[in-house]
Amino acid sequence: MEYVIISLESRNLIPEGEVLYIKANPVKDAGESFRHVEEMFGKKYYNYSMMECSETDYFILPFSERDLQRFISIAKRTQNPQNYDSFWSPNMHDFHKVEMKIEDTGKITEVYEHKNLYKPLYSFIPVSDIVYGNINGDEIFVIDACKRLNGAPFSDKPEDYIPHHFVYAASERNRYMSEIQEARQQNKRWTPDLRHFVKESITIKFTDRFTGEPGQEERDLYISRKLSYPIIMENLNKLPLF
Image (cartoon, rainbow, N blue to C red; front, side, top):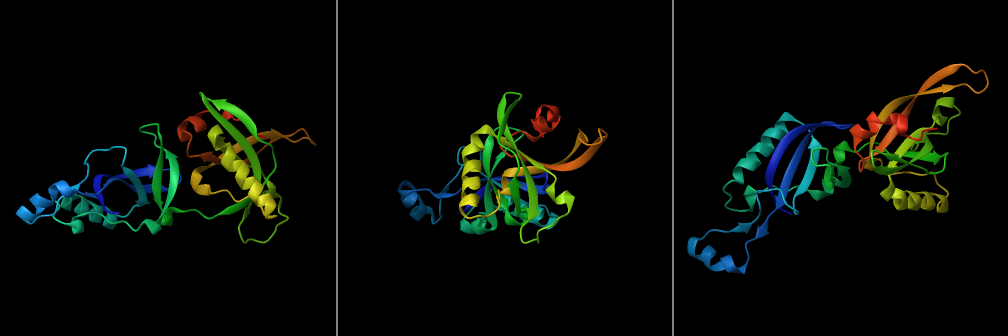
């Protein structure tokens, strides 16, 4: 696939940090109606839009000054392209497709995230049933699970069994249930695709049920990218956390 770059910027995302955020439109052959014109002028014509549209694809790559300058150069060449060498040709095998809520539009969009931004996989043991809730009009559900790094040996350390919380959009229930069912059929732990989440660390306050003394502990909170990260973080007190 060939693309024309219509927007290039540096963004700070959570948890990725600084990234290159690229908006690009696919390049197509101009069609048979341009064949006579191409023969007349000896020039190849292409069809593409320089405006954001329904065909726009979004790419997130690790930030580097070198890549920034490279993409600026590509974007400049496409202002007056003469051939396919003027366009950007990403290797799509280097990217994962992720659904993400774009904060400046509020829309859930499919984004191509570079594999170098991909986080390690963890397996989990769900320790709670689905608990539903509503955050500022968004229907959500929450589950608790214990975490274990894939390939790591089993551990008796108490900290390995502290609950970690997953906050989903209600529309993701079928995907979650399918993952759980597949894990049970294969007699394996649940291994969610963490690319669908933003990871945050939160402090949970509690009262010890044996001593009655107050305490607190750090837990991981995984927020679906289909939800607004800022809104969830601003309304932690409304989450049905255990």
